[in-house]
Amino acid sequence: MAGYTEMVMKGKKIALFAGCAAFLLAIAPAASAQLVSCQNDCNLCDLLKLFQTLITWGMSLALVLVTGFVAWGGLEVMLSGASKENYGNGVKRIRTSIIGLIIMLCSWLIISTVLHIFTGSPNKIPWTKIQCPASLRSANL
Image 1: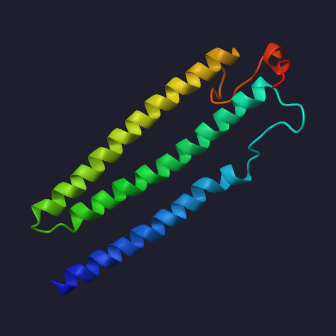
Image 2 (image 1 turned 135 degrees about the vertical axis):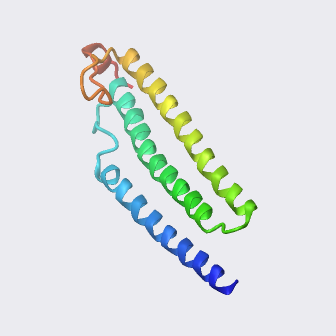
């Protein structure tokens, strides 16, 4: 039993290290990006671009977390041995992560579509970028 415990602890340490590394790699581009695109004269378009930037950053962070939880669940399933409880916990963790990913992607699609409809952005690639018309650029906050 001691060998199993050591193997589980080693697996958890590896998963924690991999999760931290993936988290840092995921936030690096967002951390270097300019959060607010205006300096002194901000308008409604800049506010909408800020929302879009925050949503995109949140999506990348959530994707890293989902990947970590799926890996953790997979590790738990692999190391469950004859324990049906540990196997069930691992499968439940994977299932919950996948459901969370689906909910997150659907909400991202809805919010991005609403932002594009609100700003009147054309549907060009990449559709995650907001292109504001002149009427929104002239409305100061």
